[in-house]
Picture (cartoon, each protein chain N blue to C red):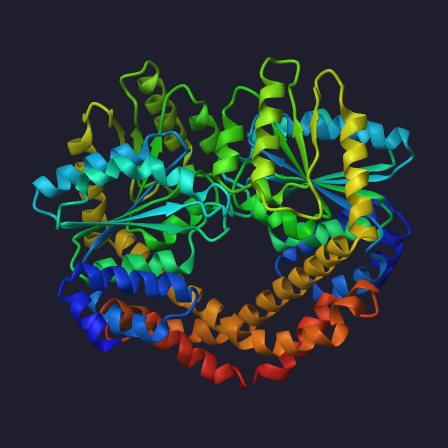
Length: 312
Length: 312
């Protein structure tokens, strides 16, 4: 493994791809690998791109990649695909647009399944983002699918979350209702060549006014990814947010919170691995039937298992 | 507490409401309470109602309640609300239609926040469903908001998952893409008085044909909740699924899987509570800064914490 990590850190694309496959396959739990990777992380700026299906996230991501390449940045992209065993293939087609960059050595694009979490991000997604960071990509973009748990998860692994809205889908209202306002650092109203984009942008600003004063007020950009307009403005806003993170107390706290969430995620995963062996043995003794018959209950069973494996 | 549980089990509505508040307030962790409740559970049939925002879930739920009441069933409802601190109030208004049943003693309706999980269900939602089961409601309906993590979670706590689609929102396609096909036991195409409902139903059936043979093939109903049509058909399908659960091997396995998931959820929660004290102390030692400076990493820190609290 060490050789593989070495080659990946030196920028060898095939080795990088193999490392990502390794964390994807072992998800959760590639600790030995990640311990070697982690010291090399923390240089990239990780951007989460999220929004409703149909908001044009893939096209917009592709445009942002082009712009970033013109600025000399190396770009890693993780496109999270819903992992339905039946329809998983179809949606990958949406990502074909990004294949414009397939021959560019300064761009690394990888699709990853969301593992039945319906748009949520698996631990492997986070580890893949860390790998791309360690392997020298200046910008790591994580593009999620759909609106839901992925929006919560993408915050945990992104430095800057970019929320894409479009006029006429009514999803600005849905997003506001669903509490997604709070997770966006940068708003983009895409498909601004359609009517109604200014209205959506104005609505967002009104919503932002309702939020108690915060150290960072998310800016709102208009764009048309199809027509390649607005990309500079989006990147300027993302750059402002990056400066906020590094140069202000609020931003520094946000970085530490992200690290805290990282530790907690790994903790949760390790804990469950430890408990699983014990639980697997117990399950075979007909304990599920005893719970079903209400001779015992999940709370008593779980507490018993804990007593057997935890010191204090 | 024992008195309170006793009164709730005897059907006292105020006591039931207080129990639900108790698990909501303590989420996660009302083990002592739930240990008293659990032996009385397992009699209700729990129905998860899910689908995109705007699919008419609340109206449909209200109609189903009326129909179930005519059949002499007592009905408990948990309406999961997204818990945005800024907009949380607004969406509750959508649920006002259900207030038709506010004066009916055989119906208990409770809104619960989703606690920042953006539509995901908290542990408290599950515990509230168990409380309503124990307190004598024959049918417990859990209505979720949005499409996303809630769909995964609702499976864990429902006996029968009812997925509501509507024509013309394109969300049949989105839902298929997002892998939600697999979680539905019963499909409903609502707003069938609009054009296109048969097309959506046909599309769903084609998708179902693509799924490898399963013991239960989800039926598809058309309905118009506004016009109160189709409710009997939906309830007949739900009843068929209930029979499948109790009378077939595949159904029995599904029940045991649900119990297994219950234990795992409680286990995960207990474990994390145990480790949290240790982690909180550790956090104060500047460990986050040391991780940020890459002097150590989340994997090493988490492994160290685990070693200190876990026996094997």
